[in-house]
Image (tube, rainbow, N blue to C red; front, side, top):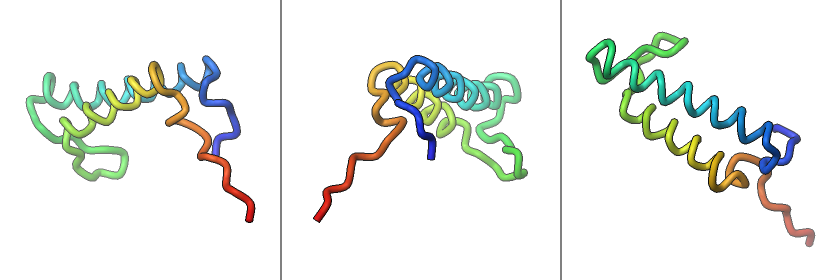
Length: 78
């Protein structure tokens, strides 16, 4: 688990870049290859619109709701 504050600028920038990479893979499959699927590192097919949606969710959460990216809520002690 990442031990960093999700609201720090560095974590938000890294998350936005990761989201941009996922978004680019999805758009690249549709625009340049003309296909709705692309192969990931493991050789499995990935549905490109799902990758675009997932990339947008990551980017938007990095910009507007960074607490989603990081720490889980503290557990209540009994």
